[in-house]
Length: 110
Length: 116
Image (cartoon, rainbow over all chains, first blue to last red; front, side, top):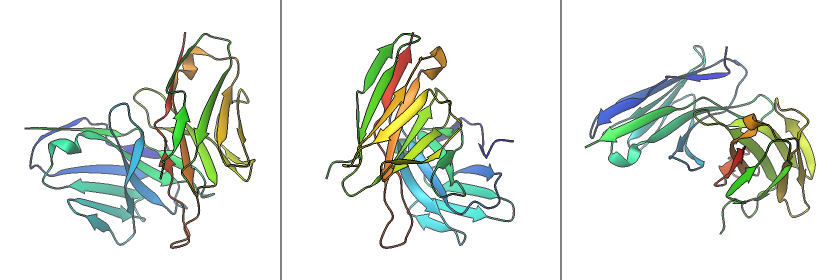
């Protein structure tokens, strides 16, 4: 089983749509969770950290379910500029390495 | 304030050759991590350097080695290149935050390596 697994995608949605990405992780001792965004041929950039209580940043909402080892990202009112690959990321138990999922590609069209 | 910088941006090598990639961390950061991202995959952790020592290593062979200098910049060396080493090599820098005690890794633009 892979350490971090994400929806295979791609997701193709119209502008204004709501889209949800799901992710599961295998190590129950993991402590830190993130969503990174990666544009084509660019480096990953931190979108948001994910906390147990859930957190929101504008149109983006991230949630964590430790019991199910499940992380989600919800994007409301999608914009063309949201088109990118979204990477689910877990920090390893030692607190050093980031463990990435394969990524889910989102394409928002007008 | 310059972010993480990497050089070169692109590189073409042939099988069996050796390559050195360079990374300068974001100002104020003392920790450098290296990742390999193959096409269509997420980045994979190679190793992390802190205080000029390799602090942790991922599942990569000894052909992959690194170094960190006193100014915190870092190098990734790959010997005996294989076709499968073709990938985007990303450097990330970080430091422990005084505010919340954790680290956020910031990535450089990467070096795209093609092995023929």
